[in-house]
Length: 70
Image (cartoon, rainbow, N blue to C red; front, side, top):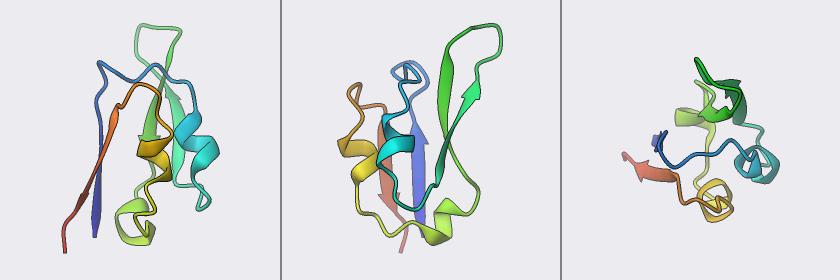
């Protein structure tokens, strides 16, 4: 099982994680009180993700961390 952590202070909502994930496990959601978006992983990602690393490698702000909880 994989845990995805998004640093909300670093995430600028660019969507690179959404573009790079071949399994479509990322979405951009509205930030409360802001026009900027925030990356969010889907609920099924913890089970479906195969830890290819494209989401965090493609993040220009280094806002994503993956933790493999095997």
